[in-house]
Length: 329
Image (cartoon, rainbow, N blue to C red; front, side, top):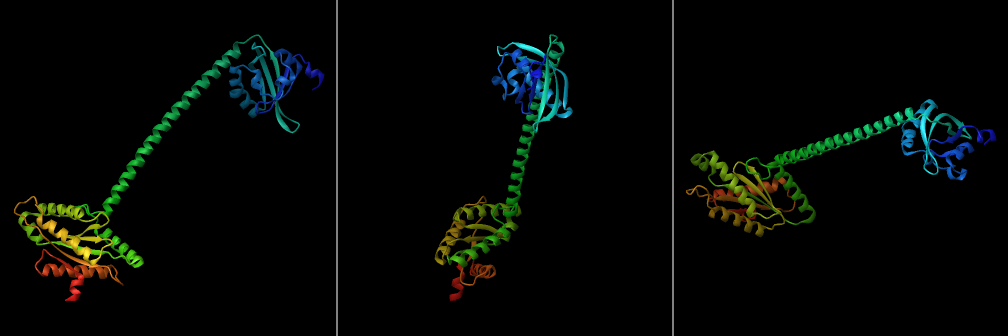
């Protein structure tokens, strides 16, 4: 630095945008009671009071960046011993040694009213900004909460719609569409593993007479009660579905011919011995079973189970028939 600038009758300091002091003259060092090594390469905040640090951030930096100059800005310096010196600052922005610096001239001053008013304004602006920030955050949290609630409602609605698409409205069992899907899946597993499964078709005996005698409302109650009994008497891994009207289908996974007959007979007996809400009602079922075999598809196993069911009804109802029994006749 040239000697005439170093000892000029005013302070001089050049600052990078990040606040680093690049150069400072002896006049300003003497005013602050610092040595060159104390401040060079340090941040400008070292020689500013706390309020002036905020003012520097809020006003000086934006102004020097946009307008490339600052005229007569009021700040307060802080000396090494903590004393405060109000100054009037003017600055220009220029490139020096390949980098942008803000060159500042500082004049000590006695009149502080304008500066204090500016500082009060800066404080109020900062407080307003903080309050607005808090209000914005609160509003954002509120919106996020509402969004989470809407997402939860949407998930619940989707779950409900999915359940409606999969279940029979009256009995809450799987509907025919899902029954077909599960039957196809079990056939695919059988082709890969050769682990047998069985299809049990169940039909309520003389259900038309029940509707004619007691009415359709009672008939619906019987259907729902029987549906729950079928679920209870089946195993957890089995698929129980309403096939249509008074007919039900149960896919018995991992089940041989003998096992399927045993399960079906247990169900038939439970229905026969059950006490229904109409004391005079005697309810029975007929059932037909088909167990998977080589070359089966959905139509073939369904046909064999239906034929076995027809044989049970033809032979007097309230009985179980396995398709293999028809083949031996």
